[in-house]
Amino acid sequence: MVTPPQSALALIALSGGVDSSVSALLLKEQGWRVEGLFMFNWDEPDGYCTRADDFQDARRVADQLDIPLHRVHFSKLYRERVFEPFLKAYADGLTPNPDVSCNREIKFGVLWEYAQRLGATHLATGHYAVLNHTPQGIQLLRSRDRHKDQTYFLNQVDAGTLDHCLFPIGQMTKPEVRTLARRRGLPTHAKKDSTGICFIGERPFRPWLENFLPTKPGPILDESGEMLGQHSGTWFYNVGQRRGLGIGGVRGAPEGSWYIYEKNHEANILRVTQNPHHPALWRHTIQLSDFHWIGSPPPKGMIPGTGQTRYLEPEVPCEMTWDPDHAPTVRFTRAVFAPTPGQYFVLYDGDICLGGGTIAGSVEAGSIAPSTLRDTPRETRLKL
Image 1 (spheres, rainbow, N blue to C red):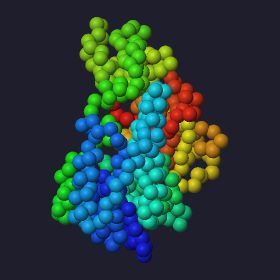
Image 2 (tube, rainbow, N blue to C red):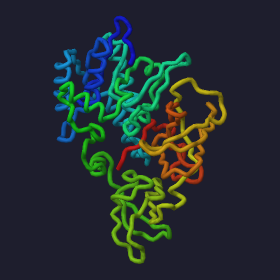
Image 3 (spheres, rainbow, N blue to C red):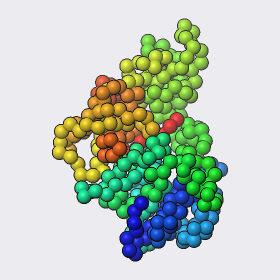
Image 4 (cartoon, rainbow, N blue to C red):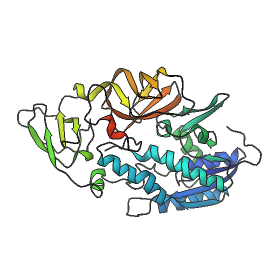
């Protein structure tokens, strides 16, 4: 619990979900002066985006808690800073996810700037994360509920911004959040968790992406070079993917899944294997195109810790070579599955999230060279 300073105003990003609703409730109970804000970040209603309904839920919560509710449209900025870079990354053969860039650019970027114009001293959200204020500076810690922890998606937020943030539910589990919401009679207590992002919603991803990127058929080859089928364009697929390949029964091959082990974007070729232990799928060493430290960068050298190359994957012990004049290299104590260019590697010291960088490729192989990422915004993974 953070004791509110005198004359402090916390602006809570009310999304219309149970997490932000309980966050607003807790701030009120802790004595904060609270105002809510609802963001419209997507301006093309098509039956999948639920923002209109979410706004009504946010308004009901604000009315019940007796707090003012602002609403603001960041659609133009969202399109420029998140959506268009997202499409460019896919067109370049990368595997992006706008969640990290949305946090960096919108929620803890333009929203925080807007909040200050409204007179807010703090920005609160319903993220599952913990902030620890120390004499050496702010620390971003994993939440108590490790299954809901969202520090992976906050790895690019600046320490200066985090110093003014509040994550009221970071020490709670999801069941505890729902129980408290139900006991306090919040209208969102039983609302289903949102999945995906607003401009995609709960829809088949590849058909949606085909509205923006053209199909570009090419061969799907097995390890011997035999053609097994055609793909729709390498930008629609991930290394490690085993669903949606359109490969039926193959004469002479056993029943089982096929995995993409190589994506050659320039040649428009996918290579697949039925061996989930294929060496091209597992990497001990990856290269990063950059690294953002949440706190002050340490002296150059080997930085030990644990790392994740995907959200909710188990952490793997590793060492990262750090030199501000060179791209970092990460070496894992055991191989990790399909680290993919465009995704994020996030480094932890225990529960402390130190920061993250964009995966540029693996040392052993990689069809996308690090140079591809020089002009590409730092995006991360989107599940297919």
